[in-house]
Amino acid sequence: MKRRMLLGGMSVGAMSQLTGCDKHQENSKNTVRTSSTQKTIEWTMVTTWPKNFQILGEGAEYLARTIEEMSGGRLKINVLGAGELVPPFQVFDTVASGAVQMGHGAAYYWKGKIPIAPFFSGLPFGLTAQEMNAWLIKKGGLSLWQQAYQPFNLLPLPAGNTGVQMAGWFNREIQSLGDIKGLKMRIPGLGGEVLKAAGGSPELIAGGEVFTALQMGRIDAAEWVGPHNDLALGLYKAAKYYYYPGWQEPGTTLEAMINLSAYKALPDDLQSIVKHACLNANADMLADFTAKNYQALKILQNQHKVQVKMLPDDVLKTFHHISKSIIQDQIKQDKLAQKVLDSITQFKTDMEEWSRYSEFNFYQKRTL
Picture (cartoon, rainbow, N blue to C red):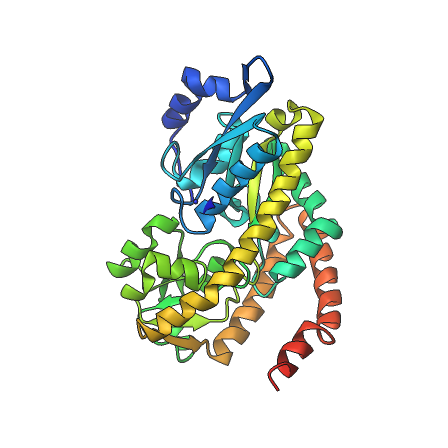
């Protein structure tokens, strides 16, 4: 099983080269090969993750293999990691243009194009992975997500989830809100805006560059994902304080984005296979993170002597207050935003009521 990384700006000239070459002109359509027994459609997927990066990059590979297996080999997808064809933060534009048919990443990277895109990946102090899946699949969230992407000729589908993340790695202790002032931190999406409003300085850095930036002192702190991926990147070598909880990403949904024209050109059964394969990959990635994070945390603590600490209450309370204000500002920028926020807020309220009787109470009592 395999998965990948993030995008950076691409010049008009570079984009022109990408879309102008014969190979990717063909990719703007479904490339079809005919044999004596069947037709094979070939797609290309670009990702925001490094090639075969643990769980994330592997997830993109897993999705591609699942689609090929479920289709009996009729739909084959070539997966390219960040930088193999385009930089990580150029995935959105590349798929939207039709230069390739599919991408794999996280919606909060596209906030500059779609202000409410982060709402579909995860909001600070928002929905957990279980709640995100329920909202997207059963309470209308996916329909709203697809409505937001439709003007870009893109079809988004949930294709992974990290579960609740860690707050990040810090090269100094955070003892009060004052320690956030001037803090340079790798943190994307709305979480970065919250940090900025609290006096910090957010940086958007691709996953493959996080370790170097932290080690070389370009940044003072970095959030990436959680213990398993953080251990794989070796972040414990660059900072010794590991903080929780992951207030900024409580259940981050990852996405498969599909060029809508390419998708509509597929036969009905292959369209259905793509959708169901994405849902399968979504569940598989969450299970993978859940199964591996606790093992990695033990290694970080016992072998590498990492100091795991909880963020102070005053920091969390301030972040929570700022988050509410920033999210309210977001709905002023987009006609669809109020509808999306109302939907999330109502579902979150319902879930908090139910969770008091279910998971929250159970977690407190099962260790008695």
